[in-house]
Length: 346
Ligand code: 1HN
Image (cartoon, rainbow, N blue to C red):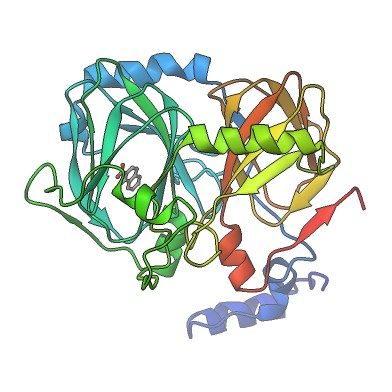
């Protein structure tokens, strides 16, 4: 699939057929069908200590109500101005101050929240509130009413991950606002976790959506699972100890378009080289270390966010025990039979 040479008569022909809304495939074929994924996404880290000042400052510039969602978008420097952290995913850090409300709306984009700083703010989804704590993984399924509020006495910051670019590509975005600022609550807090998140399901339960019915996976439980499992001392050479969040009603990923994971890398662990076709966003919960993507070194510590592009060899190094949350578009790729991984250097 080599590029063909341009001659004056060919160019004249291309100009003529362009007027008929046609173009020669042979001039673009190799770009359309690359030998392997070529990505504009650049490996990047956002150090929380460096950006926290700007996040807090946004709180004095605009209210959550006026902003609707007061978020600093984490823009991949390889995709400037596109509100993307990867080709298919959006990420941002959202600030909500004590007493504020981010008004209720719904949209077809799926959202995840991963709590980074503060405790005690809530999100309400389809009539149920959940109080959020650092390390909790919280879901807003497509087309569900959601509003956030902070009844605590400290600012709260979380990482938002959405499939916004993917939905834009598919041209399937719809959204609407609720008339009231906060939605009416119809179920007690903790109802979903009790109903679906204890290894039990209501006897006649049939999944009503492609998203997990659990909408807060508390860090306390996730961390305890990792801590108990580490006693087996069985470490995957590429991942350490890595768990995926699951929809208990189907066994599938918790969300239809975004896979979410939590992994433990013990003190001093260095993972083996790995790559996969799903560009992945990481949020560091505990510990420090670095991820090497080719020649690029991404040093990280607690609350940092970093992104590894698709199909780029990388490995992680943990200084002390480290816990990493991550998400990607892997469920979409798997359902289309496209997902690939490469464990090792060759
Ligand atoms: C959104 O609805 C939220 O509900 C956060 O908190 C970030 C980014 C793009 C589009 C919608 C939220 C968003 C968003």
